[in-house]
Image (cartoon, rainbow, N blue to C red; front, side, top):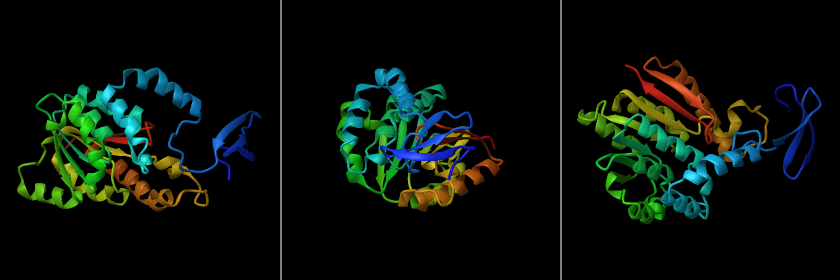
Length: 261
């Protein structure tokens, strides 16, 4: 099925060729689930090689290359998103942050490098083994002391923090890149923990482009399974009067939420 008035033609080398209204041939990825949301792989590569890789800190480069060998490497934060997070945290002078979903720690390292020496990150993930893949690099970078890693589901930890009362409105920035079926549950709790004027970043909110794909479009099983949860989140965030939002086509899509009341 074609989108935006385009007519699908033959497929070559794993890509579907589409013809636009003016007759120009444009390449489209046949399967919903491609990591980059840009229309052109060459354009994305240009961004990486021109803007991202030349300025990527050596520890982040090392961790990115190590993570690329991991069997679940699709779960990592993209290099351009890591650069974006690093700059964003510097712009808002973040000091107390939280990360839900760590994997090998690429976004965690981007955050740790951006924070001042006395900055803190509460990092949560259900798999310590993955975190320990990147831990030696984080330690070598001299920022491990900023990280308080907790293994296990995040929701019970968040509930306890809210019950304690002392964490209300204390976080400058919170990054969520975890189980998409719990994003709504995370938001219900995080809105109380982030400060007025603070930011929550939800990753994968364009979900491999599947949010605009026809219901019968070919998708990987995990993409199809989580698609409705991502759509539900996007709708809820747009309707939440407690936040201002900005959805950015960086990586797999990141929605920034600024708490305003």
